[in-house]
Image (cartoon, rainbow, N blue to C red):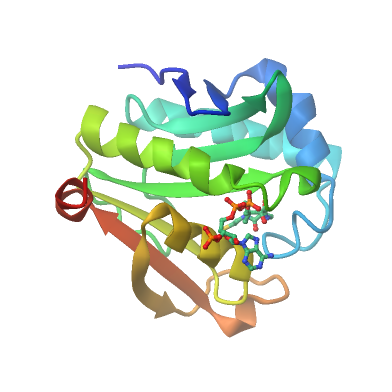
Length: 185
Ligand SMILES: CC(C)(COP(=O)(O)OP(=O)(O)OC[C@H]1O[C@@H](n2cnc3c(N)ncnc32)[C@H](O)[C@@H]1OP(=O)(O)O)[C@@H](O)C(=O)NCCC(=O)NCCS
């Protein structure tokens, strides 16, 4: 099953494609957006590389990947629901990582949590995932608040394998299982 286009009350979530590269460059070039994610604003070349990684994420498990969000045709940011990857994410079948990154002018309008709730619905009810988790630096309060707002709960704290500023405080993982999700509906 390829990634579908998804819709919430306000957001259209479109599978990431090469035509979205310039939007990713706009997002990753803002140092405030990248504050807890890297060593600062990303260069065009670094975002081009990231774009290729993001596109490849969609090839591993049918239906998972990156989605680009639009409100009334305006790009607001992206969301992920992707297979576990990297040193801090054991590769367990049936699990996926949730994530989000929004343009600063669209923060605090409820968009990150609104898009996340749709990806949780899609992941559990359409893909049949067993667990969805999200990870962030312990000091990334907006991201932690978004996880909670979307319905995830704290699962663990762990030492970060990242080396950028803030990583020394460690990372946290939040989670929602399919069982809990379905029992709450
Ligand atoms: C994290 C991010 C996506 C949140 O986006 P957003 O659209 O502003 O989030 P929402 O408006 O949906 O808010 C979700 C919850 O977080 C809270 N929140 C958002 N920003 C916050 C902040 N700066 N401080 C405290 N709480 C905050 C909201 O009040 C809301 O909680 P509530 O439902 O209890 O009211 C956005 O800040 C961002 O893009 N940050 C940079 C990229 C990043 O760090 N991504 C996460 C990487 S793991």
